[in-house]
Amino acid sequence: MDVKAILKKVEDSPVPQVKKVAVAYSGGLDSTLGIEMLRRKYKAQEIVAICIDIGQGEDEDRSVYETLNLAWDLLSMLPADALIRVSEEELAKYHKGQATAAAA
Picture (cartoon, helix red, strand yellow):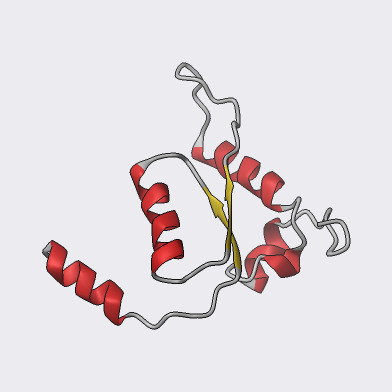
């Protein structure tokens, strides 16, 4: 797909109303482009870029399982009902249930 076709596809996509959004931000091209799309296409009023140093250096050899487990530890800091794109089944299985809506 060429650039014009991609831009046309983005242009023709339905746009949900977005007021405030949190984005996992790595600082790379993809996450930076995503933030620009939130501004330009979705007209997001407030964007919170979250960048977390999880302490993995070049020489650390963490498995995919360990990385996913760490991700669920971080996601469990949020109330389960805030994770609207995560299935109920995954939440029941992995979310540690430590956060409440009042705490977040």
